[in-house]
Amino acid sequence: GCKAELERVKVELAEALKKSEARDRDMSELTKGISDIQRSGLERENEIQNLRKEAEAKAAKAEKIAAETREQFLSLSYEKKSLEQELKALKSAITDHESTIHSLHQDLARAQTEIALEKELRSKAEEKENDE
Image (tube, rainbow, N blue to C red):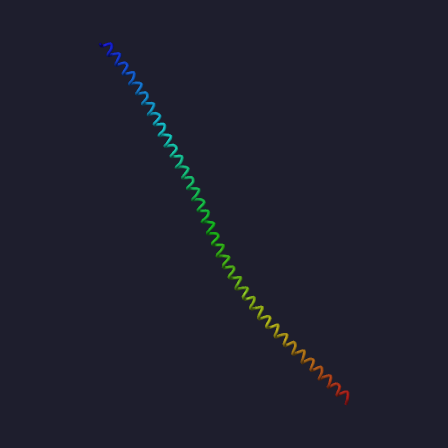
C-alpha cells in the first residue's frame, strides 16, 4: 500500500519535474526566439532610418543643385538680354557711322569736283591772260 503509493508519487514527481524542465527549456527557447525577432526588428528599423536619412540628404542636395541651376539660368538669361541690347545699340551705331561715312564720301566727291572745276577755270583764265 503505502510503499507502492510512495513509489507512484515519486514516479509522478519525477515525470512532473521532467515536464517542468521541458517547459522551462521551451519557454527559454521561446524567449530567445522573441528576443531574436525584436533584435532583428530593431536592426531593420535602424537600417530603414539610415536609408531615409540618406534619401533626405540626397533630396536636399538635389534641391540645392536645382536652385543653383535656376539662379544660373536667370543670370544667363539676364546677361543674354543685356548682350542683345548692346548688340542692337552697336548695330545702330554702325548704321549711323556708315551713313556719316557715305555723307563724307559725297562731300569729298563734291569738293574734288569743285577743285577740278576751279583748276580748269584757273587754267583757262591763265591761258586767256597769256593770250592777251
